Length: 323
Image (cartoon, rainbow, N blue to C red):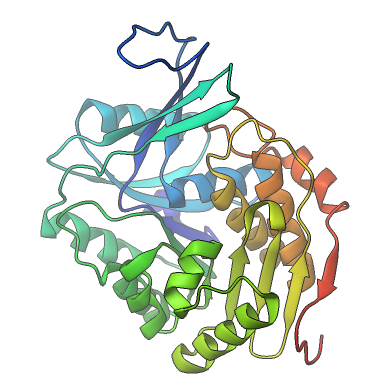
């Protein structure tokens, strides 16, 4: 665990990937399409969060399982970015995901594979490594999907492991995988609008309804912060007493890959350097917006995040009780 020592943040990516991106002139069925040279990045939610945090000046201990030739490639890509990493060797090959940009339509196509199964010993080791971090990090960030073989309550177990050592758990996942994390009291969750509507059992996109649903979730599950990303419409930040709305920035995206991870990482960076929730939301929207400026799976750049943060407008939302 030497590589993770003294890191103020730990990220866990239980289903990592090597992200391969390319472009074609036009996507046509049943046709051999000539691609531009491929670009490879390390991928998976927690890994992407750690990549952005590093660019913003904060080291994170990056925990992930990896196996086979693709796993070796993933580790080398992570090392190239200077991330502190703790790797759990696995029996099966690490997955690759593919992103293709159609130059004619200006549309991006993302092909995401499920990943090979993890053995119980492999995913259990990931949890044990979280609990063994010393000194405990301020935040434990678990983000992304689950590969086959990992139980649906895995993110709930991550929350418990974090809380047992006095760390705050930040969870970014979807559907039934998120509920166990709520039940164990995650500190912060970051759903997108569709995920949030499913979680809260509402089809409404009305601001007051979204805030009311968030307050219900906070009361029921004792979570502290909901950061609701809403794409071009911006974002909402909801706590027991505060509701803030950030307007979206008018950016024509070159890619949407990693925008959510960039949003979350920039928000965490802000929370590490300042307790202001308004500032955290401002940087979250700036981070997500900055990711749209770059092609493929390159994520956001620090200079773009700081520049765009000054352009993000934050206003009180709904029944904002006090700042």
